[in-house]
Image (tube, rainbow, N blue to C red; front, side, top):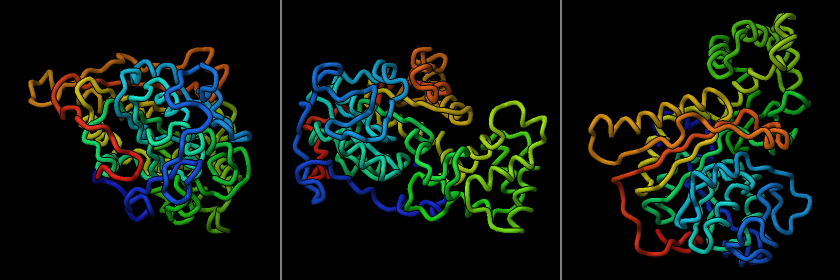
Length: 383
């Protein structure tokens, strides 16, 4: 994992990952759930298959709707039908994970990681039909090496990362990610970590705020917004989302507010990235993660803003350049000359997918050989 990180802000994420029992018989005592409903490995689209389009777990009526982004493209690049071991480092509600396991059939195993315990609860319900073929862990994907060691895995056939905030988090007012509704100014992906957006807004220096807003939000008016935040918090603490929105609106000149979308969008993005350390060590992590791929294994990353995409692009280019430079060890090939974007039909169905970009990389030679024994990911062994 990349060494640069704010451990004092990450709370429980610095502790060993905790496997999350699957919902179903035995859930809550660490006993793996028994498959029920859909048989494990049911092909996508077949009767009884978990829906990759709606994200509704079998038997979980009323579960918040989750639409996996670029699902067909993820499957095309990961090629899970080959079977093997896969990591979904941002498992969320389990939409991508379910499709991967369905395509992989009985030979497929998946390790799902997420910082958000609420998302893991949804994933637990959705992935219950796959029984002990899946292991869910509350943690950070940047701790991948430790999570793989805990599962007894030395190498994997595919890694998926779907970066950024999820629709579920945006749609839950209590999480404080949205600038459209009033809520506590929170923005933590993992509620167990101690530092909230309100903490940063009310304690960070003017220069630090301006730097975050400029670098993470690519906001033209970063300095002016930081000035207005400092002035406003001196009058009273800024504790809610709409309170911050009003400060930003006051800071951004009227002519700028009339174009370029909501005036608070970039500042909220910047604060969210700062609270969750989203970009810290990402580029270095991607290069490290690629080292866990078996020959023929693939790393697929979905990003939603230019900062993430640039980090992915640089990491992939650095990996591919090793072979060109004649370096020893693993060789990597970039599979996407340009980032893959959603088709028009997907954008109409899910407008939030519009900014998604997918990049994929394949390990062609070198690295660990496939393990001879079947994976143990039910939490009972494999250490």
